[in-house]
Length: 102
Ligand code: HEC
Image 1 (cartoon, rainbow, N blue to C red):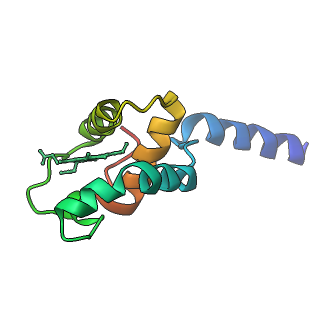
Image 2: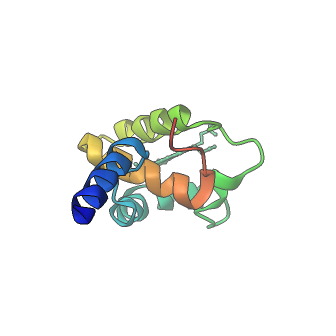
């Protein structure tokens, strides 16, 4: 009975607590393979600076998703939505830190 209670609680938490299934390490690799060189070239070799600059373009999670799609489309990259979200979550975790529950 006790284990059933735990199972029900675990299931309830699984369904109610917001979480992300994105693979941020895969996102980090996609970003470093496809994106960072161009960004670094514009910021004296610092590939992080574009995400951390004072007047950055991206100010919320939806803008981040749009910008990742925009940059990847302009490169002609064909990514699954999961790959887009891996990069979004990687950038969010490392730089932007927007609330992911929204
Ligand atoms: C050929 C150059 C180039 C490549 C490659 C590139 N970007 Fe960008 N990216 C830019 C430029 C230029 C800007 C800044 C645009 C501006 O300031 O108006 C930018 C801005 C961004 C921003 C917004 C930064 C901010 O100000 O908050 C994100 C996020 C971003 N790029 C993601 C990506 C991702 C993800 C990829 C790889 C799929 C990528 N970019 C590849 C040129 C590039």
